[in-house]
Image (cartoon, rainbow, N blue to C red; front, side, top):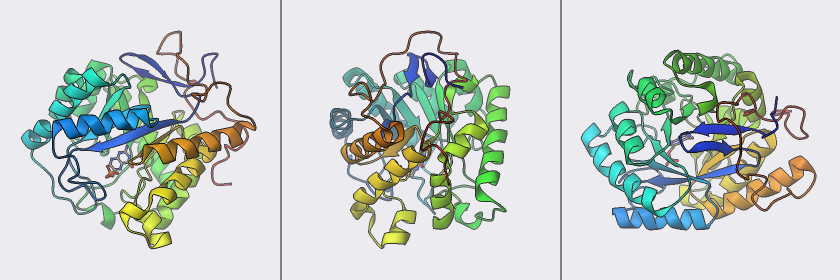
Length: 319
Ligand code: PMM
């Protein structure tokens, strides 16, 4: 059900509207991330990149200090803190969009939230650090709850599913229950099928097309992260840097299938793609240039609404 104010996401700064599709720009401050690692050598570079992403249409920025590519070695908490916190602190002064921290570690999440982030993007789905759910709950932060199995080192040995959509839905529901049991408001959570994380290329394509199913089953908005990922390379035979067009197409199809947020490196291309997808979904040009994402009034907790609008044309994921 969609309330009068439409779907939105409860964040500490107020309700974040998800009426139109949203673009989350990726700021990896790691020396080894698989597609853009090593480009952001300093805090100043990271902040400049973040500002440029906002100028190009990013509605949110996601700052990460640990590579989660398959087989990646973990970094120490101290190292991750040192990479992420100064960038979040500086960005919070420079941009007005909500900031997210991409981390599996509670101390990093806590420090980033204190430094000005309002969302925790946990690729482990609250499974890596038992303190994470409490940190998110106490801060009333937003949460991106992503599905994966194992760790980045082991996840590609864990791709056995009976039915990948049903199994991912069930495992995300369990993670959502863990979060709400720890005090996280359901309205603060956005779910993510975790494309490429313990998924074969076929499974990633299947999940991307099932964004609407996932959203309806879990009663939460869906974020997807197809950006430059290897499932696109497996189909097209392209290197990560040459997957920008493919990413934009994948984002459009994900939004057509019912996703509300796309997480990307290449913001301008994705922003155009999802606006087209949304216009096709609505059958018209959205009423305002921000795709209907004006400010939302009313209580942030009114969040049953934040699901893929059932019954709207184009939302039958996978069909
Ligand atoms: N993918 C990566 C990292 N973090 N977070 C979410 N929520 N969803 C994703 O698909 C995701 C993520 C992979 O690495 P990248 O930062 O280089 O894209």
